[in-house]
Image 1 (cartoon, rainbow, N blue to C red):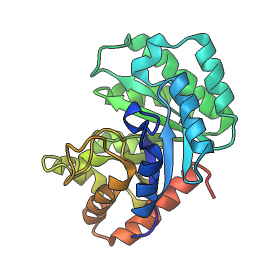
Image 2: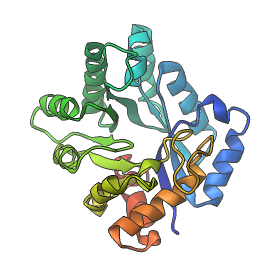
Image 3: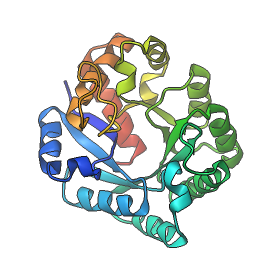
Image 4: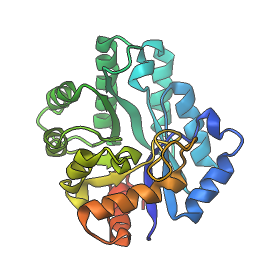
Amino acid sequence: MDSLFDTHAHLDDEQFADVRDEVIARAVAAGVRYMIAMGTTATSSQKCWEIAEGSPHVWAAAGIQPNYAHEAKLEDWDLIQDLVGRERVVAIGETGLDRYWDHCPFEIQEQWFERHVRLSQQTHLPFIVHMRECEAEIIKSLTRWSDGQLLNGVMHSFTGSLDTAEAAMDLGLDISFAGMVTFKNAANLRDVAARIPLDRLLIETDSPYLAPHPKRGQRPNEPALMVHTARCLADAHQIDPSELARQTTRNACRRFAIP
């Protein structure tokens, strides 16, 4: 299989604290030669940038994840804005909306989500969308903020409907799938994945969570295991895994402006 691109990995997570270098080395050995370390808070985003600075295979994203938005301070946003101007920071996020967890009032999530989208529009960096049980609200918000222009973003760890995926793509976003698409009870999600045009498709692990079948339940999940998700998506599209790897890596490098 050709080189793969893990577009969403929480490499700053404490589960990787003592093994991070080994995790990155295993990913590269497995063919996952590109990874984005994804921020969830200002502190996390700073750590992701530091990890990216230390590895030629890792880039970073900076942002405030919706379940932490109520804890964020104004100086945290100052740091996010500073980080997105640094080398090796290639995305804004993760951001978005979440009605599954009751950690943060929804109106606060919406305010922070808009901040991230507006920052993307100012900087031309893509934003990364977290979405749980709020498909209609996500599309409604993005449509309102798009001002009639295409947006630059990614629907991450997608588990929504084909209608939502198509609406997101119409707004300019790519669709990224994680390990859930491989689960035995996820036939409907595989059907959605099969309908995503190959030039709009991305892959991720969302590690250390959601290890793909046949490694489901392994903790921590890590980027090296993304090969299973790639094979599953190749089967869904009825193409060779190497072709799937080439296309999704090309898509990611284009979206994140990585040579």
